[in-house]
Image (cartoon, rainbow, N blue to C red):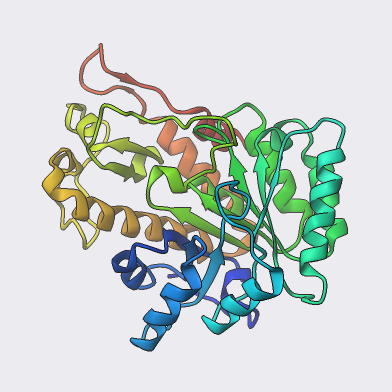
Length: 341
């Protein structure tokens, strides 16, 4: 876990959490051992955490009710704040509002008004927005100005069918936000959240499964390999996620697949093609991401952008033929953008 000296809430002090659904109590109970905090997804989060608290669990927690999802029932703001407070939340978050893409800013103005009203009377509450990725690629400074004018901490959930940071200019848009908006958090994100932290975000909540690494906009369907049931594994040397069966097909020597974290003990990542190792794959992902967080957050803030960029540049160099000329792996657009940031 990162070293924290800031007396403010843990989740506003340059830290990271794992983003976990409330029904997964087993994961909730263990991820705090390697992360600074836990972000709990869903309306039942406070009730589940209250139960864990009674059993002695004392991790810093914040709650994403996912009110930006039309399938989630509405709740009176004060009741939601009370539920979080009763569960010992590190800080209070609003239920969340969906910000659709609108080049004329009318939807931005409306959503800002909604969140401002929800935070009225709770000066330290965090306003939560699920944001269409086009606000990053097309109008990041307009979004930044609106968040600054809101005058309180803000948390963003980035929305796209697959990767919100993949479209051209998305990474630069996110960097612009982190540099211009104080007390900004990125929730429900992938390893790109560490890039946001490197450039000044105050917190990032990293999803351990694909559907919790972004939000799919209303009316859209998500991506993913539907015909591959093997677990997705974070490969640090490539700074990205790959299915276990994909990794098992590599025969290249350019990528060292032997993981020397304590969870793997030098074993190869190609073993994760076997469904019997699903829980081991999840343990690997937690520890690999926590190590990446340590490597970024436990150095001076002014050195972090260069360090993260170097990690991404080194990763890009490992892409190419994976042992067979017919098996070529190319870096995703997000990674390429971070390497050039």
